[in-house]
Image (cartoon, rainbow, N blue to C red; front, side, top):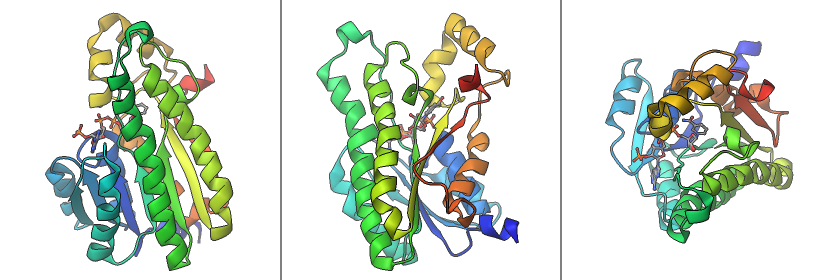
Length: 253
Ligand code: NAP
């Protein structure tokens, strides 16, 4: 039956940036669908764990700073130690640094690229190796952005990194489809999280953005849940290499 295809019971999901925002929302959604969730973050995920404990879901955390690729084998090992397998990877952690392009520093560029690009690729690679070893396929879901499609203002490294996520998602989908691995992405619109605190604090920019969103509101972490569960589940087995916008209609304008 169709709803059974969305059921994630017995699946193990790794979600990066699990302590807050969209990552927290996706952890809760995946756990509600039955997955055992490993949340990766550089600080405690106790709030996420408490939300999942409310419905007796499964959650464990791995503390890791995703600006270094040294943590990748640890994330894989800790997941296998906790739950014995990996079925789903959600690359959600990301940072944004705002500055006029003319003044943008190499330090900021490298900081954004380490988390938003290098870490994402090498974590995909490490988890895909496990998927291939397990021999049952797997699901990778990257988090893109409206700035995978548009230029943005004062965020050149972020725009470049998120545009690259869209391309990387296609590239990996092509190479790993033969192993029954689907690689897709979600492009959130303008969502009320720490990532947009500065933007929402700027009255003029905030009003301009809100006026342009057909849904008439900022998105929330809960808005990500349906799409991430779909992309993590058998319901999306023939969806591969695609980036789905969850944007209240922003791109349709
Ligand atoms: P957020 O609340 O700032 O969450 C970002 C997450 O990434 C946090 O858990 C953060 O941990 C984690 N993170 C950043 N650097 C890290 C590092 N070095 N090591 C470990 N974890 C690290 O913002 P969000 O909106 O939920 O962002 C989630 C994803 O959605 C990001 O990829 C973002 O670019 C993307 N996105 C957001 C929007 C939006 O409007 N909010 C729109 C499009 C795309 P800390 O809490 O410790 O910083």
